[in-house]
Amino acid sequence: MYPIHVNLSGKTVVVAGGGIVAYRKIKDLLNEDAIITVISPTVVNEIQQWHAEKKLTWIEREVKREDLERAFLIIAATNTKEVNSWIAEHAKSKQLVNIADQPHLGNFIVPSVVKRGRLILSVSTSGASPSLSKSIKKELQQKYSEDYDTYLDFLFQCRSIIKKEFPEVCRKALLTKLTDRSFLYDVEKQRSYKQELLKKIDRKLVNEPINE
Amino acid sequence: MYPIHVNLSGKTVVVAGGGIVAYRKIKDLLNEDAIITVISPTVVNEIQQWHAEKKLTWIEREVKREDLERAFLIIAATNTKEVNSWIAEHAKSKQLVNIADQPHLGNFIVPSVVKRGRLILSVSTSGASPSLSKSIKKELQQKYSEDYDTYLDFLFQCRSIIKKEFPEVCRKALLTKLTDRSFLYDVEKQRSYKQELLKKIDRKLVNEPINE
Image: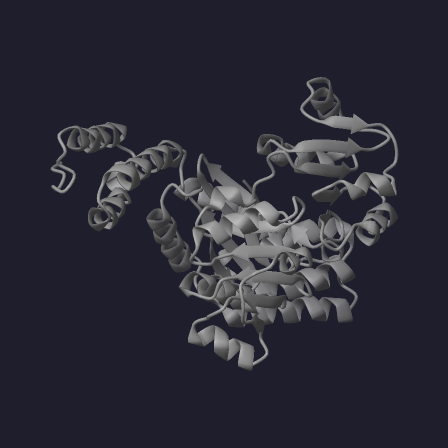
């Protein structure tokens, strides 16, 4: 399996099914800015709510062949094994297809994910143990705490500044310095370092080291 | 960004470019059982070697529009920014496209990956800090050692046995028990537990607890 992080912004995502499995999959998709269509005769309350809030479109019927055609990514999560298999069979080979109850029939799986702003970690046991997957996810959540959210923003901003304003010979040292985890919990240190960078640019001293 | 693990087995992958960046991307792809075509007037020795070994097909010229059409997944890794942008522009919206030097022009990125057999971990900082990404990858490599390789095989085998042979009411407890990390470094314990499972099936005692 080849792990990739896909930008679903503006992409058509079709979810067949409206039960708890579909609900969980959709929940992960909602922040991705995709155009989500849920096709199912019945759906759980949360999906109805999202439809009412225009976060997705719910089509109240069984899935048809033409529903699949326009999709960039398809998730088959109905409660009928035969319908899910039918979707696997009728999706085109170039589409991304996940079959919730029979992963081997699709061409991608959704790993467990830990997001801390720009930091994205994923874990999968390739079906060997969903429990271990959950347990490792917990470990990652603990080790990579919510402080990473702010820290990654800091890193992103500094990287943009450094790449734009500093000469190439200085960049690597400056960028590596930032990954010193002493910055992680110390928002004040982050702020003052960024100030230092900006001051240097103002004073045209981009070739000199930064004192802490 | 939406992390997924894609099964590339039998899928057509087109890599434009044959330098060090292309080389690194191809290296990750080689174990995925994909049909890889590299298109580039020149390539590094390793790619020539892989071509000679029939692990991929090298087409010795610039990339053309029709090369892109048949691809499930495209990686633009030439050393010419304009060529990479041209690929981004001419790929179809339903294709998976990675533009190495300008990730925002494509629709997926390749995270750093740690593989331990069936265990797959990925990390991305969404471009905020490749150095931090590398550093977290190292932490994951240390924490999730190579012992996980064997351990995941053990989990997979036991899961198959349990799901096939044990009544549904017993499964959850048995499966959760396996994630006790005391099994991790103890291959002998793994072996004897699996034997116990098989013995129970032989003796038709699948409803009784396993003694350790």
